[in-house]
Amino acid sequence: MGMMPGPRNLITDVEGIRVGNSEDASAKTGTTVLVGEAPMVAGVHVMGGAPGTRETDLLRPDATVEGVDAVVLSGGSAFGLAAADGVVDKLRAAGRGYPVGDHRVPIVPAAILFDLMNGGDKNWDTSLYRSLGQSAFAASDVDFQIGSTGAGTGALVADLKGGLGSTSCVLPSGVTIGALAAVNAFGQATVGDSGQFWAAPWEDGAEFGALGVATIPAGAPRTKLGDGGNTTLGIVATDAKLSKAEATRLAIAAHDGFARSLVPSHTPMDGDIIFAVSTGKRDIADSEKLLLGHWAAVAIARSVARGVYAAHPAPGDIVPTWRERFGGEAG
Image (cartoon, rainbow, N blue to C red; front, side):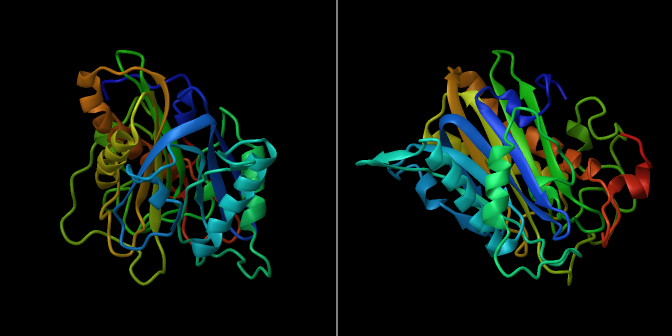
């Protein structure tokens, strides 16, 4: 791949960031929260045709608020946006948030994916998601699980379970960039009938099996056509000092990672969204800043494949995991 991953090969290799997951096994859904130890500069870019979001207008470079306290990715379609309420509750209790007079208002952008038709019991009377948001916040740490957990719990791709994936890389100057992806795409993360990943050219070591690059199959790609909802959600994070405009550009460039790892991507039925956050702890040279978007896209592509590769089976699944179909217990 050309760059070394950080010590965990997770987005939390960016110092000052924690990630927490929470899920409901019977409902086959969950929530993931990324929390900054201090407010983070943030941007966002939406490229799918069916997004569900909260607080994304606030991330425009011309908008007033400069920092966000956390970012939430959740299952549950529009219901899942309530997960951000749970995170806001916890942040307020911790004294976090944008100061307005005597009050502090936690700033928590969020995005959701559609997992309502994945075999889980969704017949709740009161939304699960506020509670899932609180639990995910409480669980946030520098170490966290990937695969069928958090926002990736109920995720599906065209013919396999999806999942939550994460990676990182460290640039020559010591700047770190990490990615987190909740993979619930309309298309495939693997190539044709093989277990090889579209993201294979960007793999570091054997982080998703070292299976090599596949021959591109003829014909139309396999999709979830007729099966309901989709969306791949991502966050890229860096300790490089960025403005809101530069964070926005980073989020735009990172979408190339979806195109490299999911076929097709950015369809009218996907809500593909990537947030970019900066802790601002390191200065970055202009020459390295030019390539930051490239490495963000690489980290997103690797994270997509890792999320699918790490998925594990659960009762009531309607499709197999990658390991059930291709890899047994390997990996």
